[in-house]
Length: 129
Ligand SMILES: [Zn+2]
Image 1: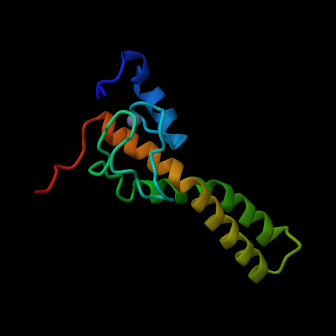
Image 2 (image 1 turned 90 degrees about the vertical axis):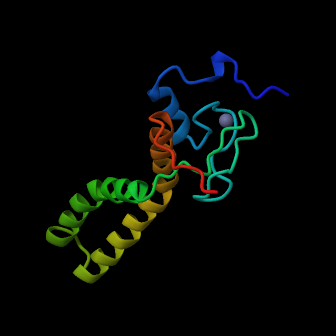
């Protein structure tokens, strides 16, 4: 079994790699899953043998997911507080539920995005011995 990828499977630019990462696929080959559970990356891609253990996105995905959800929540919250039919406590509770849901749904894609950027720019952590 060869561990070398054919040139056609490697992404031709960072945007192609990012599209793979956002879709939760291995950014290098695009064939296999990037995560083995919700946010836990696979240790090695079964198709291209890329080691994903040392590619860390750290807190960037959480920051991006919260910023993304804020773009929906702030206008909604403004509407519910000033013009909405709900009391403030109910509007606040509704916004917390919506914001948390948006963050939980988008977090894996943002992690795939930032892992792709880290891999593409060769910013992987050194392997500890
Ligand atoms: Zn792969």
